[in-house]
Amino acid sequence: MWGGTMATAEELDCRHLLCPLPVIRTQARVARMAVGAELQVVVTDPGALEDIPAWCRVHGHEVVATEAAGDEQRIRIRVGGG
Amino acid sequence: MSEQPKAVALISGGLDSMLAARVVQDHGVHVEGINFYTGFCVEGHTHAIRSKDQQRPKRNNALWVAEQLGMPLHIVDVIEEYKEVLTRPRYGYGANLNPCLDCKVFMVGKAREWMEANGFDFIVTGEVIGQRPKSQTRDKLPVINRDSGVEDLLLRPLSAKLLEPTRPEREGWVDRERLFELHGRSRKPQFALARELGIEAWAQPAGGCCFLTDATYSAKLADLWQARGSREYDLDDIMLLKVGRHLRPRDHFKLIIAREAGETRFLQGYKRRYPHLRTTSHGGPVALIDGDWNEHDLELAARLVARYSSGRHAERVELEFEDTEGRVRPLSVPPMASDCVPDAWYVGGDHGDS
Image (cartoon, rainbow over all chains, first blue to last red; front, side, top):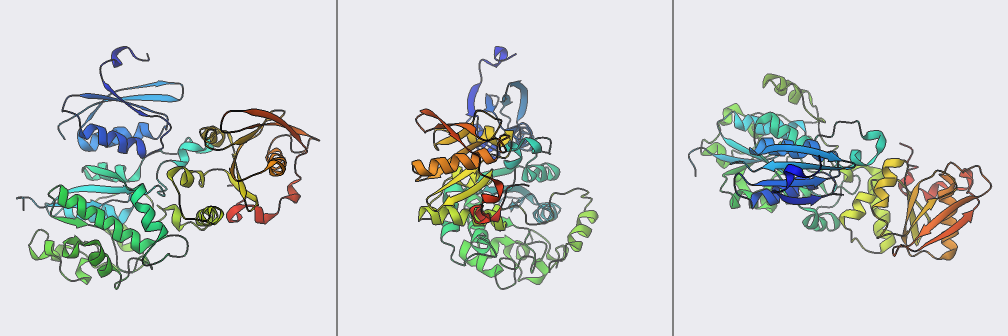
């Protein structure tokens, strides 16, 4: 389902950006967020579905959910302690 | 210095930098990776564009390496700063528009800034003496140390024993005796070391990570600069050089013609920046028009686009021209015969059939 439980996270629009730019933008935003906060990244490059979770794994953040609708994907991240 | 030494390793996604970082990790050093995005990196985006490439693995190799080594990776956007490196290289270009030595100086210098800002102790690279003719020769490595300002805080673990001891070795942060003396262009020693370290998979052996080392890409970039009369560029420019057929039938304009559906979708994202043509009577590509075209050029452009449509053998093909304001008008042209398209029109000699 599009939306629903996705209501409270900050949102980062990375549509039409090609990798690694969605990762770079995510990295910059997460650096300003508190541990436990959530960020929803909207992407259109399918490569981001691999790269953003990989970036989260090496930095200790958690991918809470991934949703797809048409050409767009939403990746919800919970900021970890690094 | 902190109790456990901390190093930042330049990670390209290839084997050498992976080995270098791993070797330093094995000395008990805390290592984090850094990767610079210039806009010319082969990583990532082109296979996100073409439909035929959609099934290829989409991983970012630098991130993959970091995950294999269990270390954080910081990807740094240097697109703007890199323009100075590319357009005015102090040490010139390699075989194509690759300013490899200036690029290395720049990246090590950026890593030094990161090291200082984050309280790290030294920098690690995967450079091997003699591996690259432009930037990894014995006489060029000291230039990188000097011009980047990193001096003796740069450790090259794969060739360290052939170089003067660096501060990380003198201080005992790493054990020089457990470093290596690799040199030359052969990759076999790296493969052997990888096996010795239990590394079973890696990405491209070396190089191949930068479009600027590609002759065709460099020719397209040179053409762009020549047509504009300056070396200005932005990210969209360098992305578009990776996409479609580029035909320059006149000095003052060129066409970027999609080769397939994925490229058509990608080029449609530029329709408010470039006027474009699309076929309506037959299936066909979208084509952007870049330059100072006139009405006479428009018919020529339409005939070329029609030549790449499924109506290439029809008497006439109908098209729509749309300007950057969204104003649309119809065109009807006879498709250009393929043997009437001179080779010289294909920028960089690239017919775009790959």
